[in-house]
Amino acid sequence: KAGVTQTPRYLIKTRGQQVTLSCSPISGHRSVSWYQQTPGQGLQFLFEYFSETQRNKGNFPGRFSGRQFSNSRSEMNVSTLELGDSALYLCASSFAGGSSYEQYFGPGTRLTVT
Amino acid sequence: SQKIEQNSEALNIQEGKTATLTCNYTNYSPAYLQWYRQDPGRGPVFLLLIRENEKEKRKERLKVTFDTTLKQSLFHITASQPADSATYLCALGGNSGYALNFGKGTSLLVTP
Image (tube, rainbow over all chains, first blue to last red; front, side):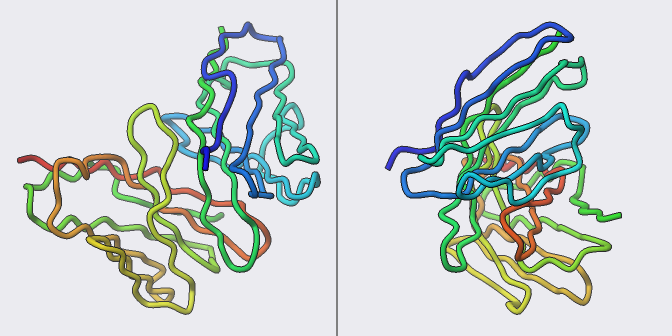
């Protein structure tokens, strides 16, 4: 099975711009979660989508949003970018059936805000 | 507030020895705890999951213990190899979906 894919892998944006990141989960996985990873804060949960609905949300401002499509693919959007948004954005997918809670991460999108 | 603490100092051990990593948490009652491995420039890779009602889990050279009274998990790698060198992350989760709270990780270096 193909793993989780994320596009683009690298992105450079300017303060005030907006950005959209994309994630394709493993085939058959219905849950997609997004995380932000920075050296100072580590991995922080952004949100989780299941069946096109946001099921959980982390403690991030409303500038961070996401959505999930009927094929389980997901996008996250960050509006009005700030320098502090520079980070590795990771997407993870889970089967979300039975009692399987393990998550499978993509390689991430490295976002640099200048 | 919820806190998950992993030893921030790197752990250096010799090949063949057992590496033991610690994860402590406060103000949290997780339904399960997971351990992940992360190599530089890559996403975390799932290793093991242990539930709140389990004391110990094993997988090949890996062993995880979970003490909900002490609020602590220990992660052991036996017969460590240089290829085990990486950052190891512990993550706690509840029953409502897949929102994981991660520790900041411990860097492990196994030298020949």
